[in-house]
Length: 168
View 1 (cartoon, rainbow, N blue to C red):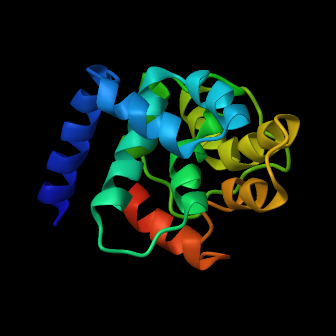
View 2 (cartoon, one colour; view 1 turned 180 degrees about the vertical axis):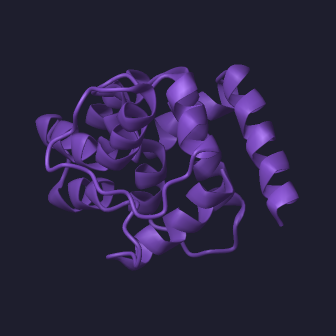
């Protein structure tokens, strides 16, 4: 189990290093997102865009009943990572040094690499929700972005999304 997880994480790392967006990826984005969504999606880092597209493709290939809203969540869930840069080294640190019960302060801090990385991981859903409000997303989408990591999921759509997100 641990060996399989390590292999999977290694593959994800190299996929992130070689992230690119193809024509069929852009077609998915253009078909699913509204205009106010597209601007913020395309402002994400290439790594985050690739990840969000992969989550969406996993959902599209599944036999699950999906709403457009769930697919939009898949494409937009990590928009909060652009508020404060979440560098590849920080992303690796979060995976290599997992924290089961992380006690974070009520406000994010800028300190050493590992603390900063975990704080970004913890805070990006809230940053994303604030950004979604700024771009006039509907209330339900803002709520979905804010709670996309919460377990147990607050909505059935988030549970379906989380399944796909965990695979990617």
